[in-house]
Length: 176
Image (cartoon, rainbow, N blue to C red; front, top):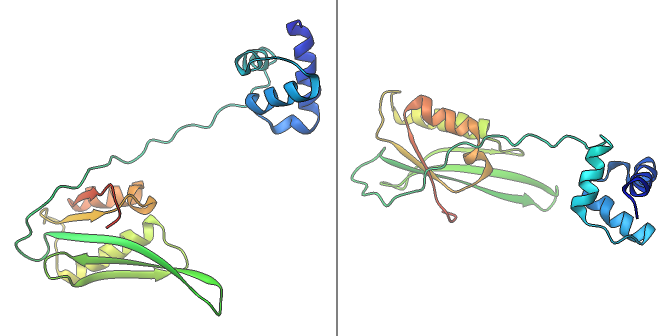
């Protein structure tokens, strides 16, 4: 089978139901509909020659991760653990989120957030309020915030907050 014939098959498929398909799924369609024995690499090359490839999405740069270390906590305001739990109310069939920040030394809750949505900005505002309640100044750099690998803690909002405040941020490989 010539490349020209395969290109006409590809164009026929792209006009039909396979218009939103990528080259891998299009390879399956060519194999199924036209009984071709064809490699996905060849379909990609022909797709590219026809100039009908959809551009790939850009990969966003992720916030840097710092793994947690075992620390000796000798007083309050040295190590704070943050975690998010979610639950539901049976009668309303809706979910809610509960984010809690706990001081590891005295096991007191220093801040919390509850709501139907929990994003990095919500965590940041909860921690700002918690730091203000504990009387911690911006210049105090010995506080470490430890969390799991949740998306709220791996995002840029949480990372920037920790950088601006001079806080250490560490994420565990396992849940807290």
